Length: 624
Image (spheres, one colour):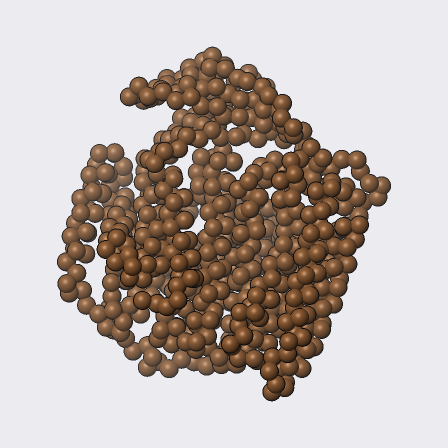
């Protein structure tokens, strides 16, 4: 019954789009005030999608295996929390979540934009309805979460165990809030461009949506990174996995857009940048959906392997891109070059430099992600693009980017100089001395690491000064920049000082090296509701005589029958100690992987600081 209600709610929701478009077009042509019926129909559409989504949740909770989606992704022994999260932990359910957020955001937009021009609001709604209708049709025709199975199976196939995790349960909804938030930015920008409505007032209005989308996308990426760190057993927080990349690319575009919109609301500059970045952000979000849903990417994150679904999204995406480019070239008026009459050493020029750096990083990641796909299509040859590719192309440009980010905020508008900025030289010297000390004492490649560590420390010192000395002067910017500098420094030191031991041990055996001793004491076996656990008991002693007890697990799930490795991690303010075990096939050995990962917790804290900077900006009433 819940599935039936959910399916017909989608049909009626699609039908309401016709009413919304009809009344919007009629209201757009008239000179009257905004028609309240449009808001009512938009709310009803949202309500129908909510009912549909609740219907799917109820089907999962009740283990209704007559529903194909529930049968494929649930099981009676699965805990209730994962039954609910299983609603969006699959292709069909995640698309329904996309649609829910799309309808929610446009309704909130109409409520929050009452002071804006009537035609601008209507046109934004119309552009958003084009996207909403596309998703309605996509879900109903190719990806319905309410397909029936007859006869009804007694058991389901279960959810992939690595997805049965609290962090990953909340990761997709938060990430989608960031992705789908970019749709409102996209629709709003097209509407404003069509009406020549882009102004300082419009920039202040749309900035809140850019900030909200950016905050949710940042938190979504953070949660995914934390999940990958402890759940996949790889011991790292970022692997340049293609699906990680497709979330990072819209974040880079959105971050650049955020800086441009802050300038636009002050100086009426960078109109073209704002339009192009708004289009690019949503396009990249949609491209990520295409890549994940089409099955062309080989990743632990991918949901579907159906080229027909991917083709639908690809055609839909091309239509949206064509529409947006048509509006940009035919409606956007070229900016007066006199408006760009500012000195090379100024805040405006630093923003432009920042934009080009971010676009370079975005381009490298885009090429690294899609090049293997095109190569396979053309030559049938499969290649994998990994960290060495990104390190070689990104690190040389990361150094000047960090220096520019340190100095840029110190510049003034229009024209600037670096007088009375002696501390910039002092911090540079201190940073250089610290980096030389670190590199020389830890036997690391000298040249590139010296420059990179210097740049990271330099940005950290400059942003720390701004945060602690001028923390109430533009707190949101200072906190976000301080968080970013802490992130860069933590990542760099983590990479330099991380150590790893990989060995095969039987129970009772000991691994010894100059710095560490790993004693495999015993194993315990336990039966849990939906899996059997094999827990290894390890004593690990380092050269200083400190001893730790570790209890990593192997979990053997009953449905589906999959073995997962659960890392055991000990965390303090300076270091993570990380251990995983795996069975060696046809042997009584266990493969043991023990890692020491410095400053891991500061990577997570730094991203939270960046996010808090954005949250403060949302609630801040005015710029200082």
